[in-house]
Image 1: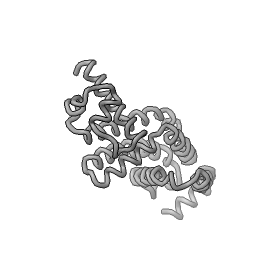
Image 2: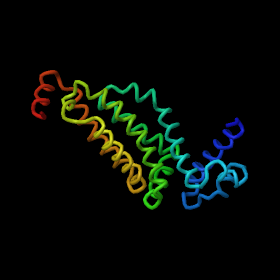
Image 3: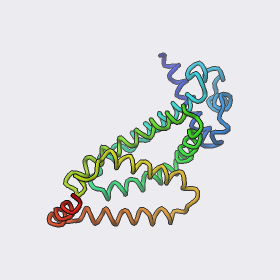
Image 4: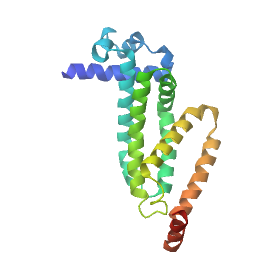
Length: 206
């Protein structure tokens, strides 16, 4: 693919994201995307086949970009408490960047569009895999190491995060702060346990 074609696709993907963020997914069309990108409408179909396929590609590329943005911070996490703290910062940064609105729009549309559901599922799996990598590392030596499967917990964490994002407009920051505060107190307690207490808790859980 030529550099010009790559640039065209990149502009269309970004235009799709911007259109969803500013106008909502109901207003997304080949015309609205092309106009925002400053390109001919036919290029949407030439490069992506359908508007839905373009939205799905935009969802995946935006997700990969956001995960890459946080890669170093994910790699620096070495406790459950630090993972909770990162989730808090990530939520606030993503909301400020407008990606929360895009995620909500795509997930809502995915309820009735199998193609979008597949794309959204693939995008969410990228987050789940990254969270799973962190959990496999921080659970080593934890009282929960033998009783919690990291992949299953990663799925639960991702589902909870999505729920927070989708219901965010109905709640205030205080609600989220209270919820995260409760989780943080629990993880801090576990992280601060001494060797004897850890063995006792591990035995009780086993």
